[in-house]
Length: 570
Image (cartoon, rainbow, N blue to C red; front, side):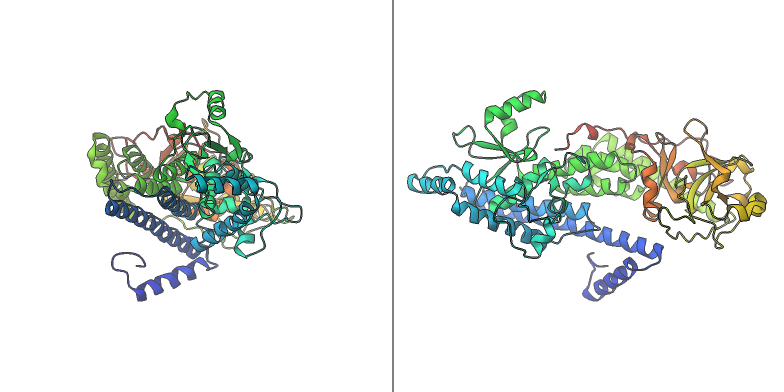
């Protein structure tokens, strides 16, 4: 309604006000879906903005023609501006809950560049190099200017600057430090955090990985006349000034505090990382390759987190805008779509039809979608299961009246008295009158157990002889224990796929859907990280024939193993 082909101002205004109302609503369901809508709109705008930038660049290149000789300063500025725009879009994609606007990014870069420019005007070596280049009409030695730039970015801040939020201090036009630096450094303590690929997080925490540090350095350098190029060194993204093998060539290791290196120094460093040197490794790379490398870093990270497959899809969408012909990423996107049971995402991707593997993936999605729709129709004709009303109210850690829950959403548990198996999909810190209590189980001990956590379980079908009235129940914490992997076989319940997206074989837990992850965010820490290859989708939990029996043919889920984790994050 807001950004589609039939959008109009009146509809957009209504939609936006409705979404904002949902986002601020105290009702957890409205709040959740408001944030989902906002995230989808933001992703759409990010992708459209990136497409527009690439289109404008292509039109400019076509207008000038391949034979037109353009000044280096002009081409360099155009490339860095595209990198800056793309990095801003990726930051918005990673930090959709705590975004920094484009104007705020530019204000931050301009503020840093203003102080660097002031320091360059006072540095005798930088001034002498610029004057010599003008007098001799020759290549300028930018090494002194790069040293000044790095000193300001990576030197410790002055003692009187205790602001940890660099972005906020810059956005509020506070006076820049005239001595010392900004204290930006490589994030060695939490290297694999997705936030390291966000420029906004870099500005706020002053920590990042090599490629985000390089992007910041280049964006600032462009504004103060220092043409810094980006070099895609394996394992350790770097920057450089000067032409290849010229006496003025100099590399910057930004992750190591902006250490300046010569080409022999870099060759030696590559040897210590067991990377064979070739001259092309130290060539500047294109702006598209820079943004693709940022996306690949995020693909690596999100693939290792079982509950971040939606973010993985968003990163893949951005990467395919940058390189639509990349068949590997398109097939990976299809596999993730199948794992999340987003069948239309696979079916509507025409590019997948160009090879046999993609065609098989589309055909599998068509068949699985048909099975799913048939199973849903069967479920709608069955008696409704008992509905549990759970308030989901919060409680403070250490509250003497409540104890923290031992079990979490997605865990498989068994009742120690009645021996049935169930999957936790809701819990409360203590008994509430809103809970529909199953008096057949614990009515006698109600007073004793009221002050402990209570859990709502999806009961395994075979445990209760498929009694429709007993498909879910509420139990006290002291009556159940967790079942570890190997203690139980396949768990069946008609509503598992409504609450979970798959089964994590490593942790022995079901992976909650987006709504449950939003409602119980702390529960995710109890489940160890798992790769996509260990996540079993849950379509089989709802596939059934008209008589409710399992189909004869077992579902053949596509293999999700891929080489994404072999890429370096740098």
